[in-house]
Image 1 (cartoon, rainbow, N blue to C red):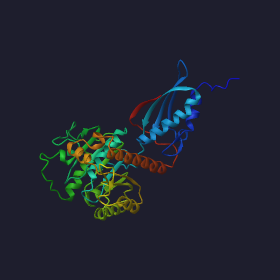
Image 2: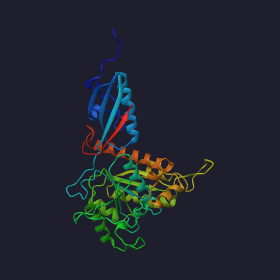
Image 3: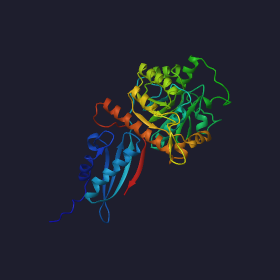
Image 4: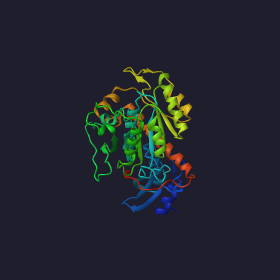
Length: 377
């Protein structure tokens, strides 16, 4: 009697895959409904299996773990080649009937309460990390008095247009849709001198009157402080949550605590904390905590939220931002770019878990999203 494995069939492949665990939810792919399609084709020796699986978060670590487990599950069946296609169906926030951005699945606030902690750098690189992972991403520069997006994305002098005379078409760079008051002023050195009501009106227009289209994530770079911008957002749009940026030293923490407190009062969930300018590694490989240490941990503990990551001090971060290509795009192999990518990975998986729990913890979310193809051999 032969001990060779049975010839792979769609049913055998589905049964083998159904036991593979999704690393985000720690549930089998079959139970979550993440197996979209299976085809089995004969080869000269062995079989080729074509799979279409669904991702609920643009997480490279998530993908890599699933690919590894898929190989382990299928190769013992005599499968020689696997062709794997991914559908990305990001879960969505709770929408209201009058939401100004109904095509946006998640609205993420990047805030600090404190100026000078690198909040705009974090927002720009976080948006790019999400885009490079496969998500559809927009970045709104909500800091009307000190817009940084035009400089950081190399679009100074750029001006949005309107195709229908009603909606503004955002500018786009590196695959990220962008909007900033800096695109609407003739002189980048010109001050915007507005009172609170004008600020709120402009922000509402940037949400409602900009043609953002369908996005998985809209990242908002908020100004320092705890004033009109956050209040307007809390009133106008259902926010997925906030990412709080701090630096390690106590003088920064004083204001960041206030930002956390404001989120609590406005019922804005805090998704996590980024500790920026965390440490410096010299040419001898010695670490220096130039601004102290432990600040991010303190904010995370106070906010009852995870510390998503620590960004080192690297000269290239500043240089890349000044030149209009943030470091995640310009130098993806750098320590800072890797840190931003890890932060984005943790962030989207955390969002997916919370939204899955909110929906009852059954099937994973479905819906229209981008499709990407990767061959696994």
